[in-house]
Figure 1 (cartoon, rainbow, N blue to C red):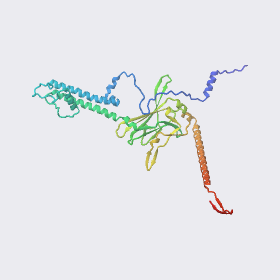
Figure 2: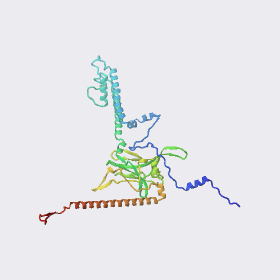
Figure 3: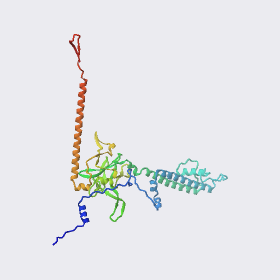
Figure 4: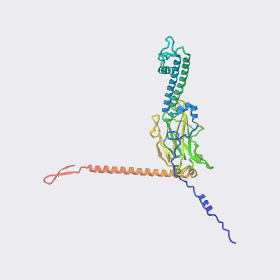
Amino acid sequence: MLARKSIIPEEFALSGLASRMPRKPVFRDRVNKARFIAKSGSCNLAHKNIREQGRFLQDVFTTLVDLKWRFTLVIFTMTFLCSWLLFAMCWWLVAFAHGDLDPNRRADIKQCVTDVNSFTSAFLFSIEVQVTIGFGGRVITEQCPTAITVLILQNIAGLIINAIMLGCIFMKTAQSHRRAETLIFSRHAVIAVRNGRLCFMFRVGDLRKSMIIGAAVRLQVVRKTTTPEGEVIPIHQIDIQTESATSSNSIFLLAPLIICHVIDKDSPLYDLSAMELQCSDLEVIVILEGVVETTGITTQARTSYVAEEIQWGHRFVPIVTEEEGVYSVDYSKFGNTVKVATPRCSARELDEKPSILIQTLQKSELSHQNSLRKRNSMRRNNSMRKSNSMRRNNSSLTVPKVQFLTPGGSQNVTVT
């Protein structure tokens, strides 16, 4: 009886072999893509093909505040100038209807407005009424009820224009992003080991002495993703938590702080290694919000970090020191970092094989000891060279003895 021989297809054998092999990261050539948030905090977004432009006119005040300063100043000037010209025309029509512009008018008939004899004088009187200058030469009389009505309308219109324009100028000068100019972020973010876990860290500081009340930090990872159904999401925002996260992520920004995000299994950075990070297209957006202590206005400062701005295996240097009972902050070292021993693997691999961290720390300790030995040996060699050179110099400075002989051949004097 022939024994049966199980025949396994070649593709199944290869698939089983591949399943037992460790997964190798797939690296892609990074394509230079535009970032969503610039380092200055401005949004890199352009709105095109907006059909309902009239929606901006429904909120005129916000539209005026959002305009650039040159357009705001032009609108400010033209608004007052047009209102003066409009009411100047009204005053000229009142004078024309009453016959004040007729050079042959009767002397016993009073004018509606004294000394308004042309459009130029009507324009000057319009300016005097709206800005309440009152030079005293042109005065309205009780002869024309129409002139009194125009006076009331111009005063009301002038107050409305002053309120809108001055409010717009005030809001532009007191905008919240002006306070954000003194909220600074480190140029680079770092990834290093803290308390035995890989952490994403960056530094934030406030240059002013006035505090930001209720300051809160939010982190988001923005990347392009594709769903299992094939839907492409160009801007997929993923919230990530900080190390000392509370219900509101509040911080006390008294001195520059290092904000830390622990890369755990819930983090979108969990599967990224040092090599994969260089090829990724992610962008970490940082948002700092709070209330300005002096004005009570809510402010927001933003920045972002792309893959090229994230340094793997670095740590921020300390910049806060105590000097004569006062804490001092050295902002010249605000973004300085130093290299530290950090595994190059992802956080997932580090959790699966904790020995990687121990081996990395041991290698770092050995390299540190070797560098110390080399440094000490170099110091000893330098000290020995210095001592030898000093001995040579001393020997060269020794004066030889000179003997003088008399004509008879006997030794008389010895000079050193």
